[in-house]
Image (tube, rainbow, N blue to C red; front, side, top):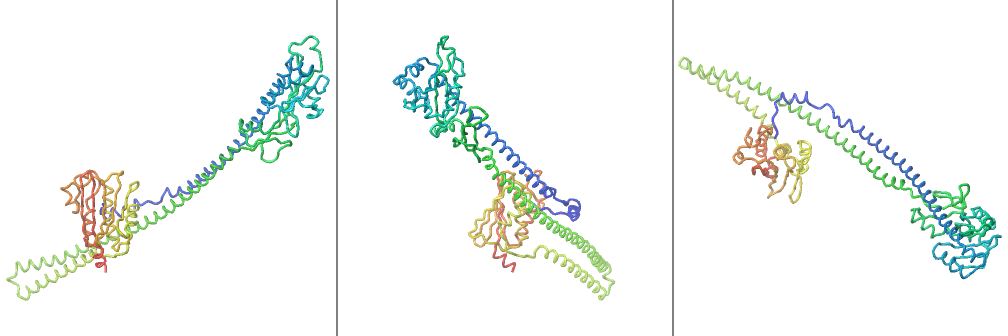
Length: 541
């Protein structure tokens, strides 16, 4: 409830306790700068991390591609070594060629299980003994598929292996316009004789497997290389590549794929939220600064109003002191005249007695005039109405937000009128009424419970109900709390002097309204104000 202040205490508040500055407002710009720098630092770190992640991912992909090529080379070398380390294969393919055996034991096996496209069998003298294409024996020579220099290199490298065990060699070459993995192994006897250990050159088995769409699809699926392909020349642009070569000094071709760049994608996914967050922070800071500026202007206006109020109270105090002093003289004169008439009336002539009576009348008239001036001042301060059009819900919410210690508390404003038109009423009196009722509801209810203000209209009468779920008012105190300095017995240590409801009652009476209180102990209180709007307009006019 609104409590009266003495001039001395109000002046002390203005002189000693008025805040000189808002430390939070001074921190807004540094906070925004720090947040901006933090966001920029985060973006820079994210950018660096994305580049590093992309680089590491490319290195990993290159290593995986090399692993796939090495696995294919190992597979081909194993097949070539396995078939060349078989005495029966040497007999049926070189010594006494057997087409039926070769087709059933070599051609069909290679065609069905190992993706070998070409099989070339070279005799000891380098001539072609037998050629398989897609698992079938064909009438062709090795030169029909591989250049002579590559054939010579394969024979030489394969024959360099020990006579006791075959060692396959792997090269890469183009057959029919397509790159192949080529493995060559010299035929080696399983149980060599003395003569066989010194025999050179040996016959050579050559297997070729294409690096085709099937192989690339397996690589893409197994190693997550996107859109893998083979390039016969060094790739340019954004595609990643790994060389296809038998050693590190040269490359026959390159296996290439699209960069996945997970870091870049992650950065793009994060960049938009980061920028939006920074923009939101700056906008919120700007709105908060604007709100602080408005609050400061309102505080300054309130402070000026308080200054004027203090001056007015001091003026009234001086006026009352002056009136009291001025009344002493006529009272003393009246007392003297009355004593004279009482004790010496028998000695006074009629003219002298009349003169004393006239003196008493004159002094009484002077006192009446003086009191009339005092009453006129009081009437001018409290009874002059200045009605205006008021948006009642907005005024209630503004009063709750700006004039009451309602941080964190919930206010429900329920306007149940058919048309939420502005109310024509005296703003100061209406604020006194609603402000004191809201302050009581705020003070005597818990922080978890909302306060409800309901606005209705019944037959041209404005009804304003302020409802809380607080401690309530004891029944025995319900009819006395409107009296000045009266409070409920259950308020315990809640501060107040019991003056708010008397102010509400007086302001409602000035507006020709009525005031009702309904309360249940421990369940809350409903304060209902009824204001005849038409009567208020007539009185204002």
